[in-house]
Length: 245
Image: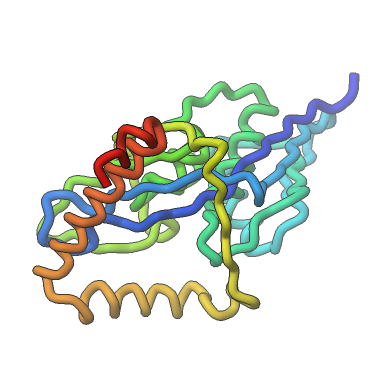
């Protein structure tokens, strides 16, 4: 009998922004996003029939592979070879890290016979520490929106990759994206280099904490909540939602 292989195909995601990025709200983060399939992550996980084969990931940079293997070792995954056939370009806003990590974790655990829930897969992956959009769009597809996390006065804001949480923010809505609504994604040349993680994080911190007073962010959050709510309603019933505009 040959070695068993599991293949996972996962979408990219568009993130339409976070609603609450200050300590003035009772909720933190929260937002909406869309799973898109013009960019995909494709991962094969093969369980080796021989013992002592260890755990290996091919097709991605060693630094990223080591980080994912560290997560898989928490579940004592052994004798598995993971091959990344296709991955999304990182740091351009398409959710590459979440898509790749979850696909590797799901493929590896399934190929060794572990039947983990979506919640268990999320915890093992270490993703979804801040926004739930990436994790929820991975599992559910379509247009998703979550209600964020309960805020505290001492809450620090970090990207999902730098945060840990045992619970993904609750999904407030999930609707299929209408086929007639085409999505166009414009990408800067050398976007990953221009928007490196460090520069992007410094920009977000400067923007959220220095550029706008609290009152402005409250107004922005209110507008975002209204727009995203209408957006979700529109996807399920466009004619009804926009009939009064």
